[in-house]
Image 1: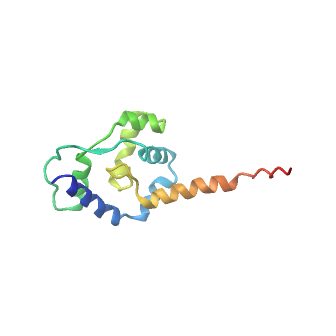
Image 2: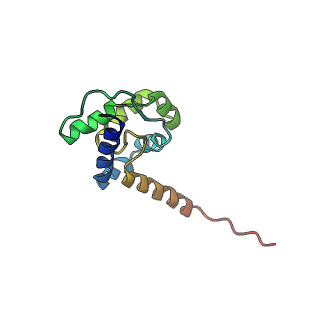
Image 3: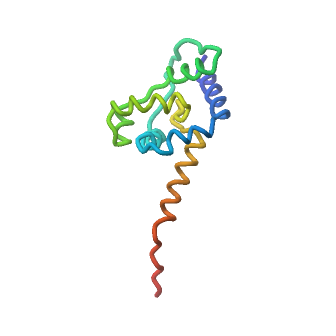
Length: 132
């Protein structure tokens, strides 16, 4: 059960992600900050995976997360939040498969956040072009 199995399981979860995950992040600025910072965090599989994953999806998801390494302190620094707050908020992000144990994010959530940013740029008045 090495790196290939890790990648294979992760691919399965990414192919079956739920768009409803967006609803958890949509109105929570704290969760949004964590998700944005997660994309820039160094998340790595451990060198020697622990135990074999169980049969259920829940067991397999837990196995993936038990076999990665990342720094809560770095995540706190990147998000501008406290470690204690991040520890509390990570549970719903991980449990609802918004964050992936490879440093990526649910693609529906990623698209939602990208569209929000693009709308911010469109909402600002544009400066008139200088002539001559």
